[in-house]
Image 1 (cartoon, one colour):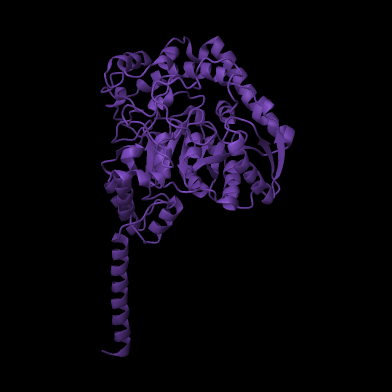
Image 2 (tube, rainbow, N blue to C red; image 1 turned 90 degrees about the horizontal axis):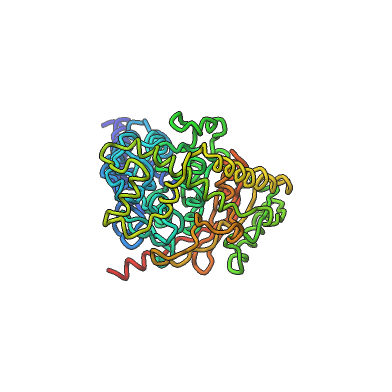
Length: 534
């Protein structure tokens, strides 16, 4: 063999050896705990692993750790087949983008073909959608592995004013940082699953706090986007006036990657017609220096603010100023208690919007109206241990969005939350965003049926602490929460709230804070709980 052939032969042998090593490396188990979505995506792109290996790793974690946490209702039967298809695309040079092959979990009020959408209730156990929701359609189009469904407070927590932790279908979720404590909000399962690394990211939904609260209490980044920035088609509703889906992730970069896919107009949700105009490349807009030269309106004393949360909040504000932001203190009295108004809005909307959704479900679903749902929930032995007073209050409404009382209350609440609330605070301070505590650290789980003073109680105006979360929800404005540290071992979040369609700015402000602070602390208590039972 001459020298040239020897070099070629050795080169070919080396290439074959390298290829074999790459295949062997890709076949190895992939450690997913605390690995960001961006890192999973990069490792897939670099051939360091496969979607099948990543997906199997998440499935294994769910099977190992979820039993006491109750974060996941079901794993998609075809999850590994989806992953194999993603690997085949990548092998053929046809990757669909950063989310191709990345496993994502979705709250079980979001329609996905192949799995029932139960909203946590046996009334919808046979609700097998024939069409994906727009959120799922976009995710499938980006190649994401639809890994499964997360637990939720039944009908997003809009069934009874008394405590009801989780759902009849999925049980009661528990916080990975302390399983004796709540994961908050109806996207509790998504918060649990994201925090415990059961997927690269999770998607929740919010009407008022159900993305940002569980994100804050489980150490995640979460965003309630501007209303209808993300389509609501195919999502079991409470109120199209306030409902939205939102990503819940370990980092702001991960959240931006998710928003790049989730956001945009959808003919199936007419309210979203302006979303494409305001959508941008959320990842490209990220800037670690985004706080420099920005004026921020800081609001203290709202719900959750107190002796225990004041110190980490002060530290967060100091970080903002150290990064070049100018902060202006805004009095909490600028924001009134709008919970009585929101109660009326949601009751009217729920009856109208839920009836419209139920009318689109397959014939296997026998509960076709809210009245049917009440009858089922009060008679079925799997359901009748819980009250239905919110259902009943909503059913008693008449006239829907055309009711004069409703229209008057809606106009007042939106004006006081937006133009005369958030917008005025920003204008008076000359600020681009409001910064405040997202909420308190997680609280102990109370027994079902306990009177907890729920958000839709008919309580006197001004009798409960004002929460900027509710104002952002009523106004339809974007609200992002970023981990701010721990209080007695439990996470708390820092909120950035801005005017309509300022989603990208809120995200990059949150990113700049995150990059300067790095306050996420991974949970550990859930692993100790599992180990103790083995």
